Image (cartoon, rainbow, N blue to C red):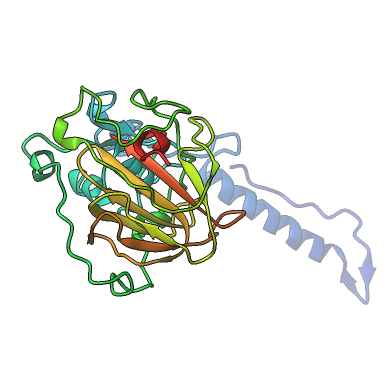
Length: 315
């Protein structure tokens, strides 16, 4: 850096002191700052950039595969979609949410990820796959003593992934759309032991019929507090109010093929894992999450909704 020379030319004087001394001091300070900057780097040089590439330990661009991705598209597996919950997936598959949780080793049933692939059929050789089709119900002393009226909803009802509307996942090939028939036999493709003789779960008139696209069951009218009965022997696999659009809901599993659902109740009189007998009072009719007092009743064959009228005795 070259030496700076300062020349004072005809500087004015005040009180006997030249005024240029202050200007010279400021000039010397500026020169010192410029010299310091030049010693470090030139102003035209670019700022240093840290290399965070693979050699420098930066983040990998590889996306981690979600659990079960290798099973996508295989029979007995389901890929989680936006809006799914574990409970809804289990219901649509004809399974209990606890079984689906166990088969997939899920620590928290309320946390599933879009794109995750879940097993929705029992593993070969498992207890669920080898379980007998019939369910032995426990004796019932009285409807009032069946269970406490307060039933705690399953935790999966408030899952992180919001529940989606029930999708139409199949057709009721064994059902007749409008002609009621008393307790038909199971389809030939199903084991004979899986046939179930259902009874009417309530005594009121049918106020809404099955519609594969809009209504997955039938609505039976009545008054607040009317008894809701188990349509067949079974086991309670859900009792709670966590599924949007169903209100206070009970789901019974009758065997490896059939489930029944009872929605919009005022009170639930059974608890999860409880065995019930056909005709046992399991709830009281109400209007929870509904526009009127009614029982929404579904029959599901291997998880697929079918017309309940085809499975109920003719009135």
